[in-house]
Length: 230
Image (cartoon, rainbow, N blue to C red):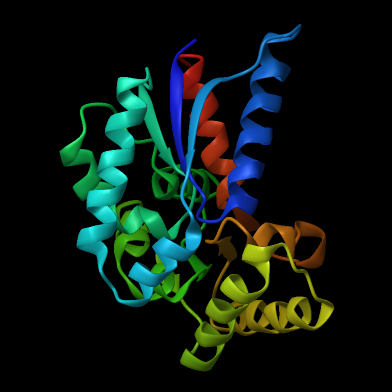
């Protein structure tokens, strides 16, 4: 089994889900007392959020690069960024380190392509929805992307940082998300990407008629394949 380095703390809530799911899925395949060989570094999210708000991706890249190099020195043979938004720096990070990054956008795009969908809605932080790093990956798989209007993007962004990232789940927030998904469906979305690793805590497939793509779970599937050399 390979060893994976997890860059977490963005937020700790989803990082805990990564740790749990990776270990569960390794054990499902190997049985017994077999679990994942992994090393986790968890940021103080307040430090990262301040830099995100300042759009200081250069400093974020420097910080994450340093962490990854420490993880590699400790034995990590691959890296995962435990958040969608952090993949905004994934390509630059890949140039700074000498082990592969298992990419959440690649894992998601492959699955959507396999299901034959041509157009999907993308939910996430404003950085995920408004920047091109996720949309470009989808387009490379001949998948078009539709995002919510500005008011809805602002609502989703705020709810992620003020509620979901703290483990707070509210029915009023869930209802608004479902309204947004319904609007995107009317705009032609054949499926919805839950492009923030906290959103699946709030929205489940049972809540929607069209396919939902839980990026955290899809990411974990690719991580486990990497760990087990499959």
